[in-house]
Amino acid sequence: MINYLEPNVIVVDDVRDEINGILDIYSSKTLVVNYSTQTSLMET
Amino acid sequence: MPDKPYTDVSLIYLDLFYSDKFDAEQSCNWVRSIIPEKSFYVIVFWTKDPSKANEVLEHLIKHNRTPFLYFIESKSNYLHGADDYDFSSLVNKIQTSCSNTPAIEEILLWKKSIKLSTNEVLGHLAKQPSNIAEKLKKIIVSHGGKSIVGFDDHQKRNILFDALDIVLTSNTKKNILENVSELNKTELYDLTAPIKAEPDKELNSWFHFKLQSEIKAGLIIPGLICEFQENNWKTLYSIQDDKDVAEYINKQVSEQTKLCNITLVLSRPCDIAQKKFGKNLKLLSGLKIINPVRKTMKRKSFKQEHLNLIH
Image (cartoon, rainbow over all chains, first blue to last red; front, side, top):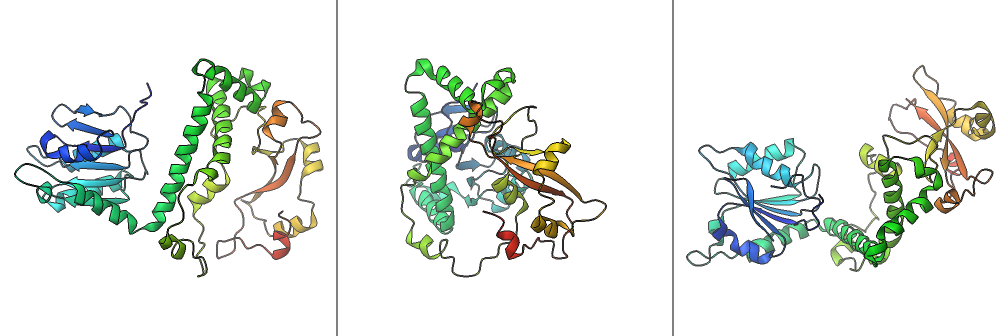
C-alpha cells in the first residue's frame, strides 16, 4: 500500500534523548529507528 | 525501516551503528533502505571517529547513493548544558554549505515548482472525491483514444500518466515564485564566457527520448517514433532521396551502418482520440542511423545548410 505521508527528514538513531533537538526542528517529518529491533520507534 | 525507499527524503541524520564490531555495510544498508539509487540527499554522520564515516561513505558511493553533501559530526559538540542538545548551528551549517553551490538552488526551485504544480493538478482532479475515477477514465480515453479499451492495465496507466505529465509541464512555469538570486545572476546565468558543451550520453537521451520497453502494437500517440516497414510508405515518406539529406548521409557507408526510415507522430492527442487522423495524421519523416560512421573526433558536425533544414 502506498505511504501517503512519507517523511523527508530521517533520523536513524537509537538514543531518543540525544536527538530530541533534531525532532523539534523537523517535528512533523521525522522517522526514528530502533537499532536492536530494526523497527521505527516513532513516525510523526 | 520502510519496505521500499522513500521518494523524497532530502536529509538523513545517521548515527553510526556500533555493536560488538563496527559494521560500515550495516550503516550503509540503513541508508539504502531509505534512499533510492542515484537520488539527491544530504547526510549527517554522527560519530566521533571520522574514519568510520568515510568507510560508510565508500559503501554508499559503491551502491549509487552518493550524497550531495555529507557532514561528519560529534553530538557532544552540540551539547547545551548537561544533557540538552542544540542543533540549530548544525542546521545553519548545512544551509550555508548548500549555499556554497548556488546552482543547486535553481534545481531545487524547479523541484518545488513541480511539486506545487502536481498538488494543483491533484487538487483539481480531487475536488469531488466521488467522481475522481470518472474524471481519470475520461482523461485516459481522451488522451489515448477508444482503441486503448483492450490494452492491459499497465499500458492504460502509461496513457493516464502521460496525459497528466502534459498537464503538469504546462503548469510548472507559472509556479516559479522566487526571483533569481544575485549570486546566480552572476554565476549560473552569466553565459557570456565560452561554455564547454561536451555531450553527456545519459542527459542527451533524457532530453530527447522517453524510452519504453514495451509499446502495444497499434498504439498511436504524439511523440511516438516508428520505423516504416512497408515499401509503399518508404517510397512516399522516406527522406533518403532528398538531395540535402543524401549529401549528409553519403558518408554513412560501412558494414555495420544501417539506415532506417522512421517517422515521428506529431498529431495532437485530442485529434488522435477523436480519430481525426488518417489523411491528416501529422508525421515528420526522419532517419535512424544505426552504428553511424563518426569522424575521429567522435562528434557529428552539421554544415549550416543542413541546420537550415531544421525548423
